[in-house]
Length: 431
Ligand SMILES: [Zn+2]
Image 1 (cartoon, protein in one colour):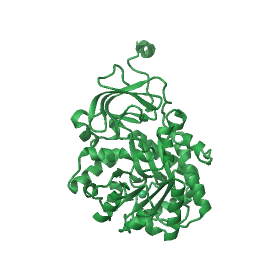
Image 2: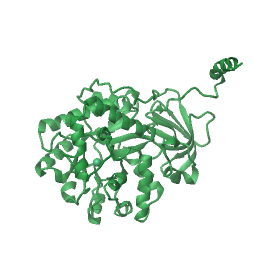
Image 3: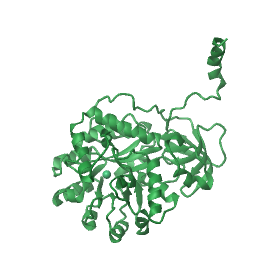
Image 4: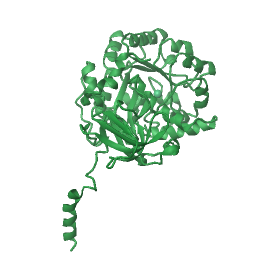
């Protein structure tokens, strides 16, 4: 579905560990200088570099259908071993999932920290919504620090990849890359022009420096301008994505004519609109916590009945913390209110967005896949799917992102030689 150029973030980067962290690899592809702005080290995660030795975790791993008991091993940034039976000294044990993929974020919104009051328009609509006013005034270093904080939250809650709608034109993209540079994550950066108008030079620069373009909504834009934006993205073989039918129902044929890679929300879509999306193979990203904040809920079972491929996103970082563990739990509850969906479907929604970065990626843990894993201290077996919907950040034992470990392992307590010395000293001092 996606043009081949997007493979670079996933399958194409396996042999080079330097390129697994997003911005490192991006620099060679895009003519963009990442600003040397230090946002402080407080949100830098202490992740390791990928290891050339095979590292292993054991427990119940997701094979794309169910949880199987066994061991998963990876070398550098690629899964190289899957077998039944547990290994003797795993880095972690528990429920083993592929790293989650947050299919829709606005990480820059983490700059807004106050309690929010007001309507969708007052808070998020361009150009005068609260977030746009705060972002326009914020210092670059503060925006980078806020995005880095949001990324740290994602890693700590098992998310290793995301698709971000980045405001602020070319400079907005630079800030995202600066934030991403220190983080063990994959990010798809979707930029947009600074204003609600089309300038071919600005759009060309944004497309060179990004994975594509993502805008607020069809109705916010002059028709000819948004058509040119989408056409430029298509010509550059990059992603075009857009919010749709969030506040009001929008004309689905006009939106699909823009060849979007995915739509976000579709709260006010009719069954016929959803069927059109399914026929056109255009996935929909739902963000139920964001919708609920504004008094609405997506009809997840209804969307699935129309055959739509659903993804899960956490939307604005000022409205929701970007934790997919929380989003999955909430999505499951909201789906139950409209008839319910299997827990496994909710998990898949939090995994399949990675196909935007790599069309060959699957939701299964398999040999040859990128070493993106999250290990949770939760019951496995047949209870695995139900466990995930009860998971919280405190259940995360280990996150592996492109082979990099978070948290970086502390000296093993099993290694007696490392603790013998300090223990003796403690014993002596208490005499
Ligand atoms: Zn959004």
